[in-house]
Image (cartoon, rainbow, N blue to C red; front, side):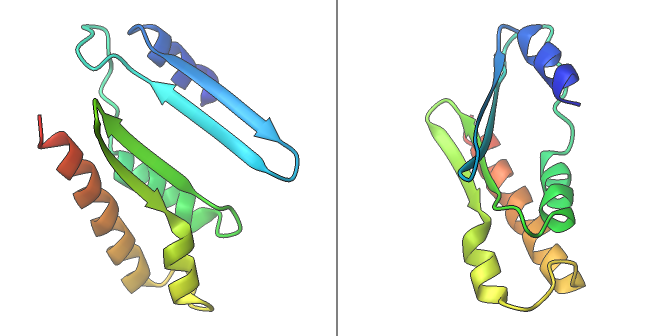
Length: 112
């Protein structure tokens, strides 16, 4: 997946960087030129990120969606702290996180 994501970003004057430090974490940054004719549809980012979040509960996820100066930031720390021992796979949790991600991403997109 990472090589395909990198190729997609570079095809539209964007880039992909990965920074990783043992014991600190890994950051993957992908940038696409939105107006480029070769930019492929990004797909359903909310569902993709939800799958990562639910499927890897031991990972601290920080998701930033930015268009120009507008941004949506999802930091799972607040949700995990609030839930304590409630599994992320609970249907109510999945529904809440899905809605939160979708509305956050749409709020950035709709300001165009």
